[in-house]
Image (cartoon, rainbow over all chains, first blue to last red; front, side):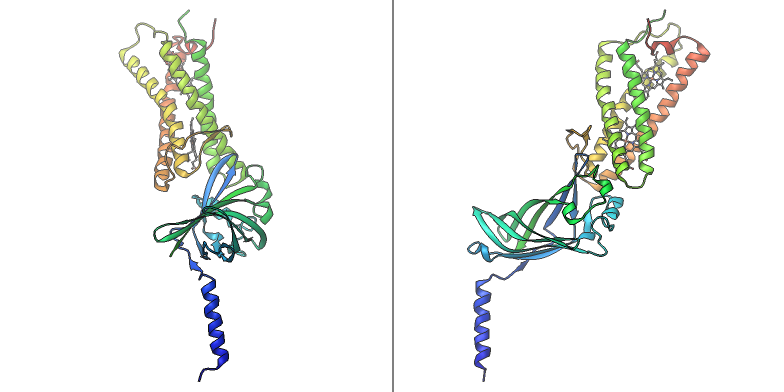
Length: 182
Length: 176
Ligand code: HEM
Ligand code: HEM
């Protein structure tokens, strides 16, 4: 015979999972996260080639949305080997001690049409900063696409050898295009 | 007094020669340096010098079309006339192709060219690693070709000056 407590617990779990949409993994192969920095006014793109994450989002309940995106800093690709080796050093991402950067969101606010404001915590190199950023959500045939960008201060996260500040802007523009199969 | 090039032609010839010397010097030096902020600066300067050469080359050819060079001394052997016509044509070609190959290489590497840090030039091709590798080799190869041509060019200039003493050198200088 089933114990009533177990039945109740199962019921509660069922209600809970029905109310909060399940977090679905993003398709890392189709998703991109790009950082554009400016060196002597020249915009240069680098791509984070190793990412993973899941997003739970229901347009009817944006406030209940949640997202967790993780990036391996050692996967940052600037297209040149010596640059790639440089940015993994302790002065920059310190990939050996801080292999991962993450964004964890705990709710979207509807801004009208397909636009939302996602708030959450951005963690890079062991530092966590609360941020909110605009996100566009597009539902396509078989996938949902989350897109947006935000400026990130290198100094705020302690990324960069100060000797480089003369040729490299502090602000880096982070752009993301996350594809989530449905 | 033999005829000479116009002061504008002379000015452009030597200004371009000076910039190209700087471009080679920086090009060799900067590529040997380990990655550093200074290295990035030298790369930027190298590109600015190269783009300046390109712009001056456009001016120079425009000026040249409107101002034919002074006639060469009568009695010059036919082969020398041909050699001078061809080497000068190739030199003109190189002062376009070398900067252009550098610009193409930058674009293919994903680094836009921002002239003097203010004027963003259009990307000539999209980012493409394999193409960038080829264009890098082309840029180096064209550099060696230009150096070869210059060796001939300078040797010819010195021959006319010291052996023939025909005053050709003075044609490419300012004078009364
Ligand atoms: C980057 C370096 C140089 C380039 C691209 C270059 C290119 C040229 C070109 C295209 C001409 C032909 C002008 C015309 O008839 O339209 C010319 C003429 C001349 N160049 Fe150069 N040159 C360079 C360096 C030099 C140097 C280092 C010397 C001296 C040693 C030199 C001496 C001359 C002389 C004397 C003439 C005039 C020839 C004549 O009287 O017809 N050039 N140069
Ligand atoms: C007068 C024109 C130019 C000359 C004489 C010149 C010459 C050279 C030389 C000798 C090198 C070294 C080759 C090597 O070892 O890799 C070099 C490298 C380079 N040049 Fe130029 N160049 C010129 C114009 C340009 C322009 C206009 C650009 C770009 C807009 C450019 C971009 C580069 C780059 C990015 C490298 C570095 C390649 C590497 O990292 O190995 N150059 N150039």
